Amino acid sequence: MFEVQHIDSLDLPELEPYRTLRRPLEHRQQRILVAEGEKLVRRLLESDFAVVSVLMPEPWLRSFEPMLEARPELIPAFVAEKRVLERLTGFSMYQGVLAVGRIPPLPTLETVLQTSAQPRLFAAVDGISNADNLGVLVRTCAAFGVQALLVGETASSPFLRRAVRSSMGTIFRLPVVELDSLVQALKVLRARQVRCLAAHPHAQGRTLAQADFTQDSCLILGSEGHGISPAVLQACDAAVAIPMACGVDSLNVSAAGAVFLYEAQRQRRKM
Image 1 (cartoon, rainbow, N blue to C red):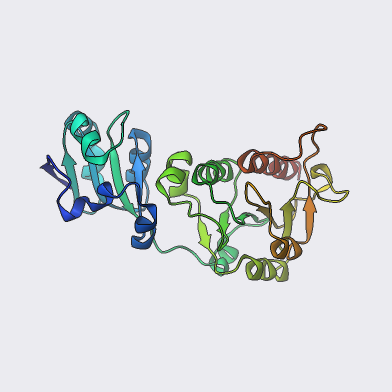
Image 2 (cartoon, rainbow, N blue to C red; image 1 turned 60 degrees about the vertical axis):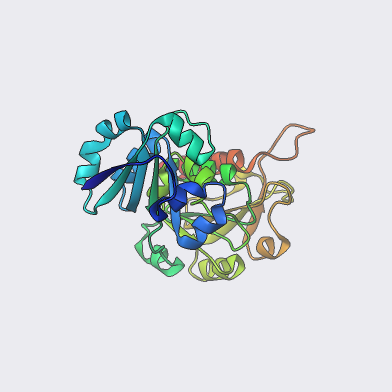
């Protein structure tokens, strides 16, 4: 269900999330996210996430009407010309299609342990601050069958606007666990026989080909600049490196994640 309201300003209180697109901390505190573009808005509307509102030019609204009608909640649909939306938000827009969703209560580590099929495959992030990298990593996790993404206390949120955009909406279906302590979570996983493997470019003697992903596993990925913190590295079972040509010591975290998770799925397909 939806109701249409034509606007020529963003002064309405309901439009605050669109006024504050450049202030992601406020969105995180309010537990909301912004989907940007036709594909992401469609995927939000198809998801189980509550939809707070949509904002778009009227021609786009007509194409979204069946999906909006199918939603259980009453969704305000704010309509304005694209040039007006660009002026109001301060962004140059390719399509001018935006929506606000509400981040649902997230599962706990215990919940994903109980509900994940074996052999489990989790990924965890430590200190990743770049929202685009984190969003691409979310998409990679979804592509390679990761059952839950564990977000350490020093990492950015995968629900930031740029992260949601880079994930291409896969964040709407990948379970996310927000942790108070990644180190403590890894201790819990190891006690439950989940092998914790750190993606570390300077692992001594252990390469990706030697890693065993056929059992319950969690891949830990570190920040773009500093890698995995010493405390988190110490809490892992082992560190594993991707063999690379001389003169190249590391990959972008999203690229490294793709290499590791492809290998995990390759091993599991042979079981």
